[in-house]
Image 1 (spheres, rainbow, N blue to C red):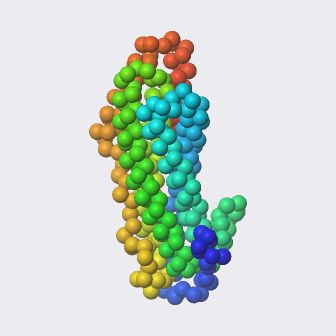
Image 2: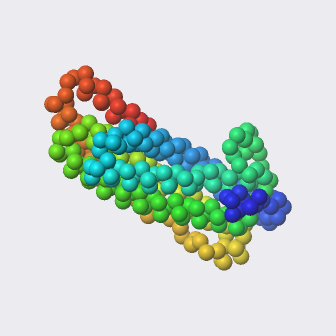
Image 3: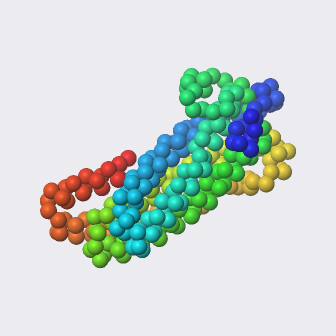
Length: 263
């Protein structure tokens, strides 16, 4: 097992001083729900990205040259790169390493209910901490990209052209922004836990590592003012749509919006 490939190297439990076992117990209890929340939230984000991908390919030929569609394309690329980081898998592996496992996928959850039997090396923890840092940087870029995209969608919506598609993209954009805010908070907690584990399990490595001990996501949740503005913009677009389409067409479209906002 090598940390370079994302697989943590494990040491036996007795390699840790017995007076530190309680501290490790506490941090593992915090890491478990953190890893679960990260997995679930990233899964929801991936679902939204798949919807965006499908809409992109279905409308690429017609709208490829449109400015709002180019913004959508940029969001799609950022999303693909973020998912490719596999940050949830790295955190799951770190948690599984405390039980002598190299992965949490396909493992009976009963294996994680007992007492931890191993600990990852300082290098393995630093590797995950570094991946968290990279993921945070992507979150910052994606948050800025989503803000710019929403502004362009709002302007494009005012023209009244292709309003159905633009409102749908706005709905997906809003949902993705909410999920990014949740991911930001989860990664903050993950960074804090990993840093404390590193200090406890390998103080020397902690002082020498190249990853900062204060890695935190700077992505902040959207403000209430932004949410209100977003709601007004989408309501305006829906009002315009209702006035210019039949009742049956509008009903079908609102069902699609509800799917995009699904929880």
